[in-house]
Image (cartoon, rainbow, N blue to C red; front, top):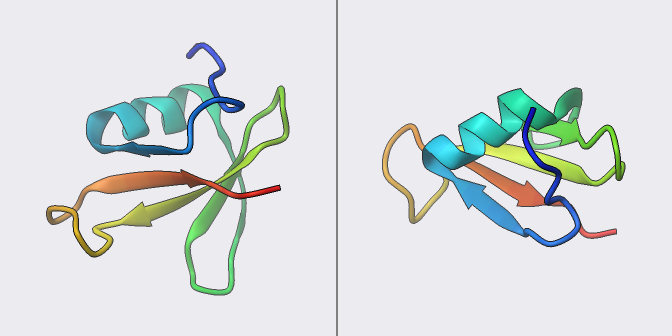
Amino acid sequence: METCRCEVLNVLSGPVAQDYLTGHLAAERTDGLGRQVHTCPYTEVEWVADRSPEGYADEVLVLRRVPR
């Protein structure tokens, strides 16, 4: 299990994002843009998963914390 850093991080990318996603977050729903929204089981912080967003290499996973 990953250490919870949901209250201090804003963005994760690449292998670190993939590890955090699979080891810590739970899939919750899909947003209006078709992106998967994941939730921290401890803090209820939501994260949006985006694959290959502008400015990143092909097939890079980027997790962005959803503002509360």
